Amino acid sequence: MKCTAAIFLVLSSVPASIAAGAEHWVVTWAASPAPQLKPEEMRAAKLEFANQTLREIVHISIGSNTVRVRLSNAYGRQAVEIGAARIALHAKGSAIAPGSGRALTFSGRPGVLIPPDALVLSDPVNLDVPSGSELAISIYLPKQAIGAGIHYAAQQTSYIGGGNQTQAASISNPSAITSWVFLTGVDVLASATSSAVVAFGDSITDGARSTVDANHRWPDTLAARLRAQGENRIAVVDMGIGGNRILNDAATNVRFGVNALARFDRDVLAQPGVQYVIVLEGINDLGHPGSSAPASQTVSAEDIIAGLRQMIERAHERGLKIFGGTLTPFEGTSYAGYFTPSKEVKRKKVNEWIRTGRAFDGVVDFEKAVRNPKYPDRILPAYDGGDHLHPGDAGYKAMGEAVDLKLFR
Image 1: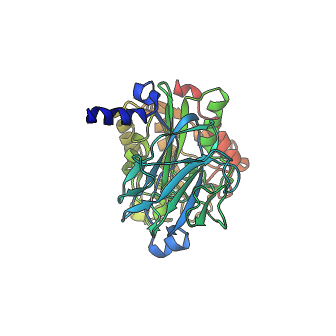
Image 2: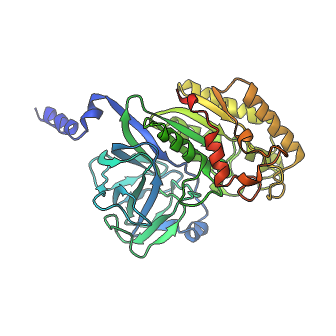
Image 3: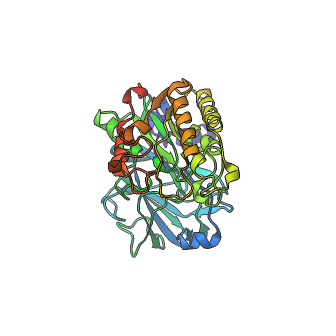
């Protein structure tokens, strides 16, 4: 009898739609973590904490009235204590929308200890989160903690304040960072027909050189286009990491993350509700050797293609559709040693295979969307972010508009 009562209590705390199986969890926002910097670099980047609150701002794709949060100690070497956490609708700066704050619990508890390299899910909370809205997730770290689960180049401002300010309307005396720390995902309870697209790539997917706090990455444009069509069933999440490569870890800068084949399971296959993947990776495999990586890490076009084939097989094994993005132009880039004529030959060969190899379930021709018609090995000046490698806001918009929405039918 006691056992039956206990089961009833557990089930009664779960929304009826979950218990009935009429809906499922779909990731609506996520960020890919990278390893920790050296201790002195972590301190300089304000990524060490003690008796402080992090209020992190995220822009979601699809909405719901039930939401949960994923906190990660990825690449952390010691357990991290979360003393309290809350979620709210974001207003402006560090402020939250009045009346929208909700306490987060973890297995029914107000706090949680996250083991090294582990991930924890919050319990579901009832909160109306509109599609395309911004959320503020506040995390109180009562003890000394080294940042982990870090996405370094967020293109989004978040805030740090002293003490437990998780319930504060705005953070008192805040300092600002443009990284997401410990926070790696937000999921919504969505209809059974809802799913997610993972945009998997490097800095060009991550939105490098786009306007901070403006949500002008190409996956943001894609998500906005889907919403404009009245779609609240296809989420778009950005799993780009600046400097990332398919076949090699970062040579000198851990912010670039581990190789794409190593992070594919965590960043793609493990995302709740994922059904589609768009891959835009390989330009750094060409550009980094002889620039920010040793020449001994030089790869061939065939090496890159082989790596892409591995992702295709692993996606298909899970029943996902995977689309290939052509590598964008990079001639004239300001990064010394990044471009050479021989690297350009390889880029063209990879793109030809993406377009004609029929290994992907579809193709997104990002190169065509941003190249200069007069000088096709270069990015169009109006789309150039300034370094002749990364697009700016207009270029990212063109990339997001290049994705055929019919791919998701």
